[in-house]
Length: 128
Image (tube, rainbow, N blue to C red; front, side):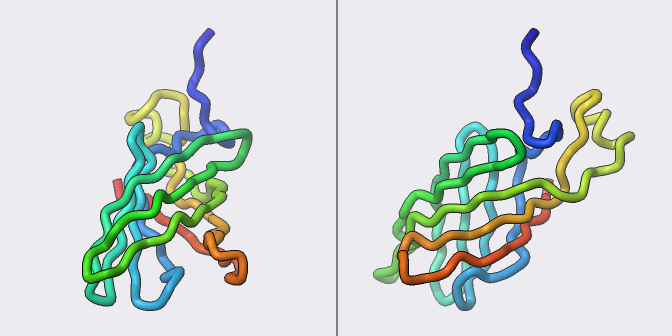
């Protein structure tokens, strides 16, 4: 029988807004869909990048692909490892996908691609 492959048994695909700013003035949004994307805004740059993601057990692994942001800047190929937190109410989740709760929040470790920079904890909240 084919069943949804969902970390913690919950649906996590969708778009999220990162609540913290991993670097300086930049705000980040990401969408975990078949073709994952992310956007970064701030500091006079606008980045529209792609990402690869996979779910394994309780973890969601996200790899940002390096992307040009204009004005001579680029966003690095950083990575994130996330776990779900905060489920949408059961009655609403059943409307979206019967019998599968929906994650409202991701708690992630954001790991820069530069080894000298330390990983940081971030939270991303569902926007759709």
